[in-house]
Image (cartoon, rainbow, N blue to C red; front, side, top):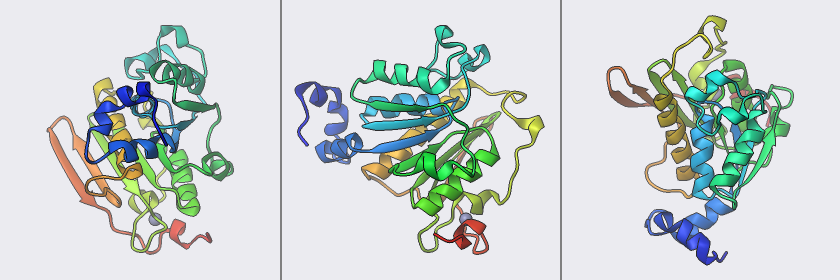
Length: 252
Ligand SMILES: [Zn+2]
């Protein structure tokens, strides 16, 4: 469990925190985090998690980098245009922290492959851009009993949730959104977004992953944080469990 001198220096600002310390840093190093979506939310989350010393990041995204991504997807540069996002993310994470092992998966996650792609992760961060993938991630996380952090943005609003839906009385992400489907007219491509907002929400999602792994502070489980950046309002809502939720009724 010993750290090298370089690691002690690199992680000094964590190790000096009473809430993290050497033991917490060791837990981050041994952690395996699956990240769905290497976009506006995934990029800052990957950057902070790699820099924080997470041992293994598994990044799942089917897309390639495009010019319009660069307004907010800060892991990528102009030279990455056309490359698969997970591979470009691996190079960026390597540059930030050679201790971090990033496994790139250039695949679209769906209900059929979700369990295979997410299996054995200690925690999942979902920052993808559509409800179909979000619900596939949530249902697999509940079945596999893996904690899930969800993060989403729309125009000037952001939401972060933390879910352990297999536990008694705890809601899952599906309890919040039901059978929502993505309105094709309201995908990110048509919708405006300020890059700094995706940066905030991605950073908050990374913090929730670190909070859950160490752990420290007040647990966020079963709560939804809602940020309205037009009105500058920040609320935390308790989400009730839906006893009729199909995820809760599915066999383990
Ligand atoms: Zn549910």
